[in-house]
Length: 151
Image (tube, helix red, strand yellow):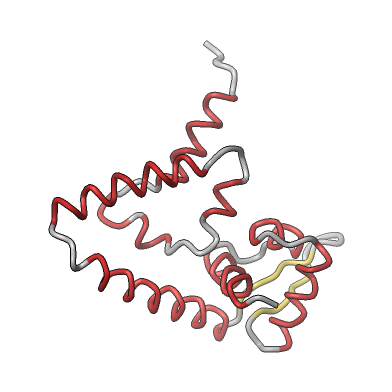
């Protein structure tokens, strides 16, 4: 299995523990059978566990080892990105932030894109200092346009 998909799954579960195998697969871009195989492998490695819910529902939850792996991944990537951005002067950082927000907004085309685009998102960093996630905002804007105005 591709490492980026496994990392994506761990990050998604760290933020949204208890997803079904099918929903986890949808968020990382896998079919249900492929997602089931991935979860089997993650479970064998001690990174996730399954927990039975009501009816046929089975939740996938990260173990402590799985949460640490997700945190380590995000910290490692964040450190590398911070070092790269550090080379920019403050006005350039602001311009980069504006351009990246515009690009992320443009990548959003339909409901459900937010979960897929943000599958490796460090949500704490994305929302630091009162920032607004551009993908989340695009999702809210799209849903608002699709919802009829009641009054």
